[in-house]
Every structure is written in structure tokens, then in C-alpha cells.
Length: 116
Length: 116
DNA sequence: CTTGGATATCGATCGCGGTCTATGCCGCGA
DNA sequence: TCGCGGCATAGACCGCGATCGATATCCAAG
Image 1 (cartoon, helix red, strand yellow):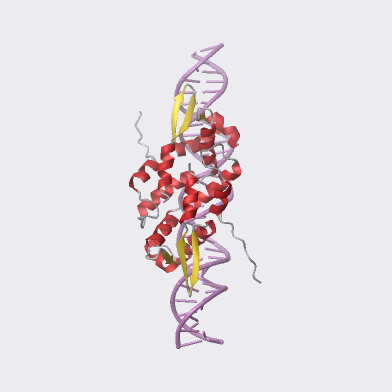
Image 2: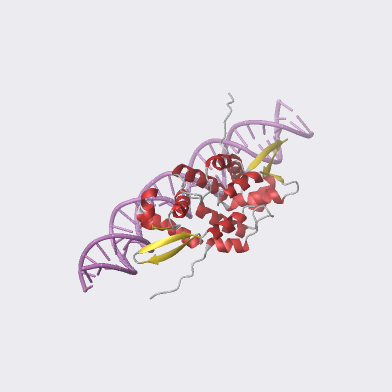
């Protein structure tokens, strides 16, 4: 049986409810959510994945384009892409056997606005 | 014997050498440095510390002002403040027995610019 | 100098997450 | 239908860092 799993988009959630960092005392819940969102970016492999996708012609990449420059195994790259996907920082499009990923820059911009 | 320890300011270092995230493929070293800088912010306690300091009258706070709202012990708060200090996100001023901390918003702004 | 309070440091614990290998799943072509 | 290639998932391992109690350090007052 197939169930629809509603994946919480970390970034979208926090940008919708969390005030800017220095605009006043953050309550514990907002701090936790913002920290969770920042933790997605606070990894060298994921930062490189975002920049590598964006540097690709067409600004999209599938997993097999990333494993070699990252020098990481395919499962590890898939893991990072899932983290980025759940956060809402990339989108995924299946084309045949390949899964193409694109960066959602608006989400990155929204997150950036919270560091104010 | 006393030695002068030169503490590397994480944020200042990365903003001086690292290109914006989506401006092209990040090399591994830059990715590592940027991730290190983001990891400083990717913690709910440190986010709350920054916002609590800023919410204080005079935009400064000493350790004893932070332990209670954070519900963390004094050593833990001191630890987080040291991380923020080493990163260059806060400055420290000793006044009598008390150590007052202030947020360096320029550093936060510089880091924010890298998420582009 | 001694005491007391504020802060820093030390050492230990423990949970989280990045990485791997092994394996499952899916779509395509022969 | 079978095999293969691309990707996802499961499970295990391991290091890092958040937190704490204990203790050291520093400063002011008496």
C-alpha cells in the first residue's frame, strides 16, 4: 500500500514563522527550527553539491554527475540530496532512469534574510 | 609562562577568501571553511544567545544574564560564548568581575552575503 | 592575605549525523 | 522476460560536539 508522506520543508517552515535573528529574543522553538535549517547548510559536502549543481550547464545535475567531483560514494550523495530535498533547498525531477536536481534559490534567499 | 595565542576568527577568514555559494563550484577548502562558519550558527543555544544579547538594554550581556533564560549551566554558556568569540560573531569586554559580550553584526552580515 | 562571586577550563558522557557496504527498487533496452 | 544501470534505503560504524559536574582562575572588597 502507498501512503502520501507529507515531507516538512524545513526552510519554508522556519521562514514562515521565525523572526529575524537579531530582531528580539528568539523563543526556544524558533531557535530550534532555525538551527535545524542552518544545520542543513553547515556541511561541506552539501555546500559543494549546491554549488556544483549551479555550476552545471542547465543548472541541474543528477547523482552520477556529483559523486566523482565530491569523491563520495553514491549512497552518501543520495543521502545529502535527500537532506537538501527535505529542507526545500533543491527540487527533484525524474527523467527516465535519472533523477535531476535543481537549486531553489528563493529558499536560500529566505533563509538568508533570517540572519539579520 | 604566558604565550600569545592567535585565535583564528572563523567568519572573517571565510568571508575574505570564499566566493558566494552559488557563484560557481566551491573548492573543497572553501566549502570546509564556510561549513565551519555556518556550524557556529547552527545551534539553538548560540542563536538564542545572539538574540538575547541584542534584546538586552545596551545590547550587551554578561554570562550571568544568559544562564537563566537559556536554562543552561554557566560552563555551557561560557563554552558557547567562546565559540561565538572565536568565530568573531561577538566581542568581549571585561569590566570588573564581569565579562560583557556584544554582537558584531557586520560579521553576521558578511556571512549572510556568502549565501548567494 | 583571605574570602566570595563571576567566569574559564577540564574531563567525561552521550546522542547525533556523515560515511560506508550491502541490498532493494525502478525503468530501459535486448 | 531478463539483465543492467541509476538511484534509494537499511544497517553499522565512528568521530564530533553539546552538555554537565568539578575545579581552576581572576577580580574586588574587606
